[in-house]
Amino acid sequence: MNDPKRRDCRHFIGDRPCGRGTDCSECAKYAPMGARIAIVKLAAAGDVLRTTAVLPPLKRSYPDSQITWIADNGALPLVAGHPLVDRALPFAFDTWITLSAETFDLVLSLDKEPRAAAFAAGLEAGERRGFAPTRWGTLEAFNEGAQYDLDLGRSNDMKFRQNRLTAPEIFCRTAGLPYGGEPYELRVPDASIGRARAFLAQLELSEPAVGLNVGAGPVFANKAWTIDGYADLARRIAADLGGSAVVLGGQGDRDRMEGVIERSDGAAVDGGTHELLDFAAVVGSMDATVTGDTMGLHIAVALGVPTVAIFGPTAPQEIDLYGRGRKIVTTVDCAPCYARSCDRSPTCMDAVSVDEVFEALREVLAE
Image (tube, rainbow, N blue to C red; front, top):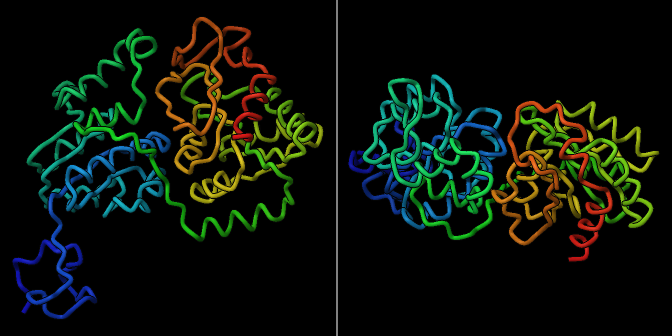
């Protein structure tokens, strides 16, 4: 007979054998869950990826814990394969119904979206850290570290000029955890790596192969470097380095990708558009990447790819390249700004020259 006291085993299914033994009471592979922890961080995908920086210090603080991560479907693949995540669940009604019957020792509410904070607040928990919903539909902090993050969002002076913490440091502070400085990681499945290798083999690339991630999300104005800048850089990579410039981007970046390819006079190679983890595998195959502050940057950092990161409207101090790259920061006096629209000309990205990006790339490749 199954021992009811062993229903907290990581392998216990409940309605059928787990395949590790027939008698729970005498099973040598009994593995209690320990502290049950839920992390609610839904979006955006790049932000979800770099928030995984909380996992190593979380496991140090709760070594025998079982960790559940709730994220939007678009970001879920980035945490589903992480070795420190036991369950990766989509933000959905079915998930809510399932988790509402469970009890957690700790809930980390790490997303500033009201829907995420409300979801986290509805879970039964012994302790909560991060962001909480108010009765007015706004946010407040469960703990002092989360209050610092909220204050950053409310003060441009604090965010753009006073703060010197990187995003992983901020996330760990919000979670009430000591940050150990470990780079966040992404585990890319073998199937994605295989598809990426097959795709890149058809391109017959020369070394060094440099990924040019030319797109950026639509939320902030001028987040991506210019099409002409990338096209000129592709020509320099081919002429001065003898390498291949592989133009990368997502489905929404297709027009920009084609613009770079057309203006590069044949120097740029079309890197195609891929599903998220296949795209990550392509990025991971590059000798270096050049990118704005966007999803491609966070993937490159997570995979340890040497990177030149170009910053216009966003805060460069929040990005940690972990000694594997260079930051190019615009010189215009209004940046960073996080503006949703901008009518200035020239823009902050117009001020970034091809020469400085190319020299940074040469240094990164040499290292």
